[in-house]
Structures are given as structure tokens and as C-alpha cells.
Length: 147
Image (cartoon, rainbow, N blue to C red; front, side, top):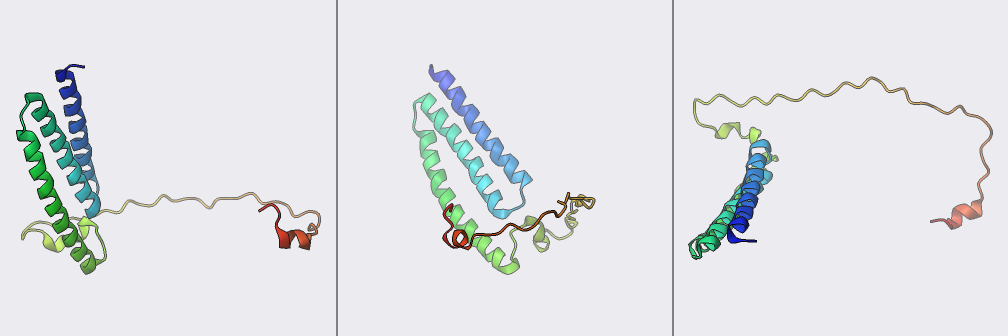
């Protein structure tokens, strides 16, 4: 496999990782999942930087990735501490709960609940009672040989 095809494969993989992280960040409302999706986007960019650095035979992209990893570690520590403080304050990690943190003059976010499906009362089949109760062997119940 030549270098251009290898670079193309790495760039496609990095783009896929970034786009999966972006979709997860936009769609989910849990703060921890959003944080992990942001880290996934950062890893997609890091993979692309390393791929370009290897293709051009220089160390610039790889050095930038090392600095990005150091900054991401600091960001992870601060972000998790902030999430813990917010959770202790409100007992939830839902982003929609934090209406008091928006800018002045911004309309509040109104979350519309998805209506639950109405299930008709299910008519379950029932067995007609017939016959007599079987006699149970007390020795078998005490020993339970099949367990």
C-alpha cells in the first residue's frame, strides 16, 4: 500500500471519529456523554495531525498532538470537577436543567416530553384449572438434585 492510500485511510478514519463525536455531542444531553464526545472529536483531529505529520516526514503534527493530550488531561480534570459540583447542586446531569446559566435576554429552553404510547389492556390467555395438584416429593424438594 502506498503512502497516499495510507494517508487517505487515516484521514477517513479520523474524519469518522470526529463526526461520530460531533453527532454524539449534538444529540445527547447528559453532560458526561457530551464531555466524552468532545474528547472523541479531539482524538479524531489528533489522528489527522499525526497522519499528515507522517506523510510530510516532519514532527510538527506529532508534537502538537502531545501538547493536545496534555491540555486534554487538564481539561478532563477541570471538567469532571465542574460536573461533580453541578451534580451535587442539582442531582442531575441533564443540560436542559441549567436554565439559570443562560445569557440575559435569552428565551428559556422548553423541553417537550415525548407522549407515552397508550397500550390497550392486554388480554392474556389463562389456563382452565383442571385436574388435581401433583404430589410433591419432599425428599426431592429438600435435595434439589437438578440444581
